[in-house]
Image (cartoon, rainbow, N blue to C red; front, top):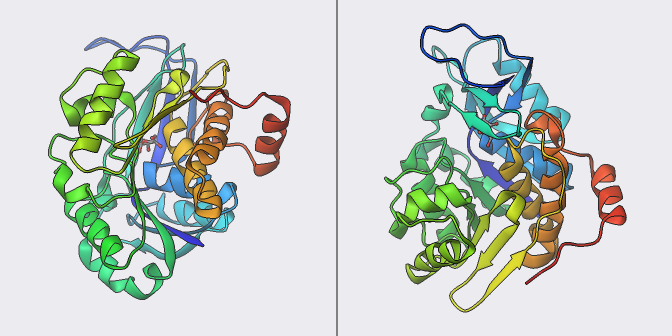
Length: 311
Ligand code: RIB
């Protein structure tokens, strides 16, 4: 079953910092990496690495980054038929700051990603209809996201929406047709206007979404694991305990791996467990896509570690 990712790509410029400079200050940072990123692209790469047949729909600019982004997709065996160059616009870029605890702060400049429009979905209708799962995020125009969800509904293709970066402009009524809605805890707080500090807070906020019609809400909670909530059930998958050096792209790692496993086996909990392992390995390494393990490394990790508890 082919997976279509309709979403963003970015060039990640990651600075590893001890602290942010104050206005007017120049500060030396110990390290830097340059890599391919963007939530859509990261999820596509993670799904492909985990064995899925992936098609990417995205737009790059007319600059030095474009060809590298396209060849990076090809390197992972991702179908780039619908990766288009836009003349006169920059590629998406993301300056990322990672602190000494591995926590990240990200700025995004969407560039060509803002030019991915509903008409592009129409133009790819024939190939999209052959896909068994569509993955979306919010680094492309909202109208395109809503259109892709309606397209999935019309053609009976399940849709997974990662509402990131979260915006209060997201109209929950327009995304209720998604099969999976996968925020992290801070995105959940923004989208619901509710606190998400404690487990109880997270459950209440997730339940407010299932009450509004979202079928499967999966909240990624970093070191606290992941919560799967439906209208009638809730399950926690605990996190693997690892030492995080860079958490950027970990949510995308989880989603791409989850999608790949779910598309193959249709087992939500099984897919969450594998995704949790894949994301855990990624946070022990620097960068976003460049931190993702190979399939062999994932299998070895799963062999050497007890499966996470499910509560
Ligand atoms: O989720 C991590 C991603 O967010 C980074 O790769 C960056 O490009 C931004 O899109």
